[in-house]
Length: 278
Image (cartoon, rainbow, N blue to C red; front, side, top):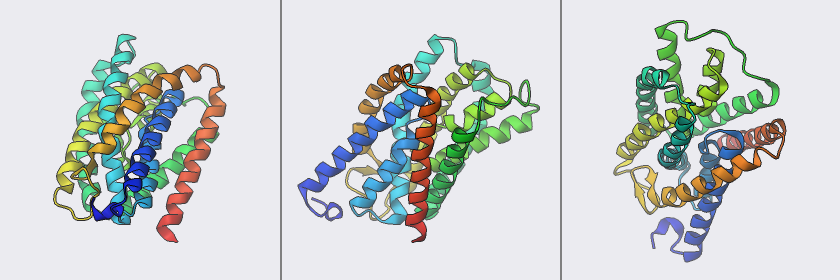
């Protein structure tokens, strides 16, 4: 048994069970609110890795890389469903994918090299902003009938990719508000965001793997910063719970759900800031 988990079988059990809970919660929230499970999975993994003694400078990088790996599978299933319903804007996806991918690679390269606490600051800050947006905003405000020019399209795409790679999320929390502001129908925005998650997850995961090769202090079963056992546990549970969450979404007021999730994000943000500056 590697020393990182104290050579104790109970620590491994705690590790696997906790990751399984993260997968269940991530899938449920993803189905309930139509957001990527990464925004739930990353903070849960962060606290699991903290509990088993992984260095503060590494735990967020591992959480982000592992979350991105799970998004490859979940986005593949999600985009298939949305595409079958005609909710994926293929021309938009083709024109927006390149700047998003460039932003993802840049973000993952930065994330693999900076102190992991920088990723925690980014996640905590954006989580707090998303919580405030969910709490106080109504329906998305339309600013344009389309992207006003190519520069805005490329800059916004690179921004979505960069921040998503630093946070370990599929980008829906960022891309959907941008697309609705640019005049896209909310259903098309959500459906296209599911495909964008696929664009984000593949280069992001590969870049974090490459950046983490040979780094000391990584937990057992790691490939670079990706903890592949964690990903294998997360994927089937997340995919199984997403449809359950989608069904529940039709029985619970959406506004109440949004506010509950906003509280979760605000608490997560506050806890991360506390850990960083205590």
